[in-house]
Image 1: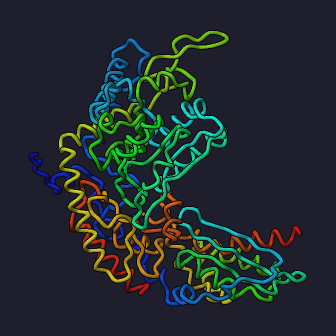
Image 2: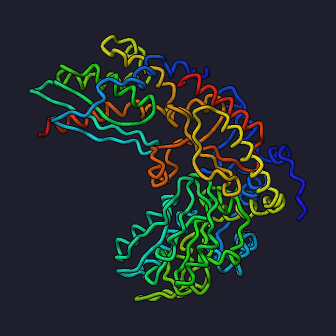
Image 3: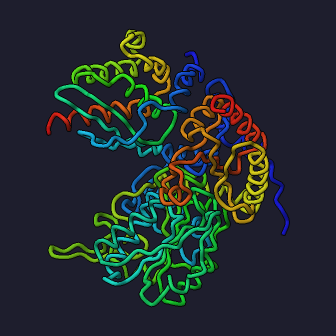
Length: 411
Length: 147
């Protein structure tokens, strides 16, 4: 495979926000796992949409409505190609991964799960892939079971044959961990889950950012992602689902756009994907996400992944030199995406984050919406540095220097 | 605007209370206890009070969290023993004034070691860390009053 020439300085020039000074220091943004920054072409697409094309979609015969509809549906086609979905009809716009998972929990879960059925998730999940299933379990009587973690935050799959059994109706697992960066062997679990006939939901909030996603190759039934973590705007995300499942599911919300005919006593539904898109959607968000996909396609996902891999390898090497550093997650770089979760001696992650911020370095401190992961490692919180296509080795060096200030204050 | 300085936040006295907190122990038979957490960052404390009449005769806490939350609780407990409930409430209100940048409050000798936390007011996202202990105190006194 040929590698695209990747020039990180040229990439950085596309992200206007990165050039600024905070607290007297040039910004080092290491919180992309929370949300990514947005490149100029995405900002331009949003601006251009509102400057020139803004109208409601699928409603008007007039020129602007046609343009807005074309842009909105065009973005759907771009996303479908990006994740190799068989058809854009299988791409449902949502507010983000959280809403996408809740949609499946509500529209598939409530109608298909019964007392005694089992839902299999993992201890590694983000709260958005735990709580919706707890809610559904409470309402249906289904039982929640967990894939446990080893001491490197990897799934323990030795007892998968008992975890997956004829009572398992649904498996919901993350592609890549937001808290630890673990790249999970999702494809293997999907294949095993399908042997027992379970429906599989993959939380791709990080997976869609840090891997090349091919939903057909992965073999799952649903894949959820968030636009804002992959250079797109906030408030737009995607649920990909197999057409036959989506067709059989009840709508998630009722309203305009999602109907075919409304009668006094009942209504009939629009076809896919509009059945799941009640109300005026986030049109500009979809257009922006389409622009983000174009941007990433222009750079090449292989180049992005290669850059991140090189960078996280360098970060791990540098961080491991620091006395008192504890890094959570897989030791092997091959099992880890662009996230490094750590604690440093007696300093609390919240203090680490304040001190790094004063040095211009933005990281996240806390439980990362993964309290079960924190509990697994016996910590209340970690500091998390996460990298993306615009980060550099100099960013890593700045992080390491700033951690030196933490050491000076807290010893 | 001048940048708030880290050394105004992380004063030596704060680090001392963080490393060796006062009154960090489990009380045998508290009159009242309150468990309070800051879900954003995982700071948590369980504050225990022994109330006799209208006085706090003993106070203790257990918990974990950042230096600011834990030092603030430690400093607070050091001032509470023997205080009346209304004096303790005044202290809580005075501390909140200091967190809102009140200069006079930060020089008030009645505030004891808590004065070292005045710099937190320049770091808005950390103010709720500093307030965790006093929030628990006011909840605990509310419970004690209603029992």
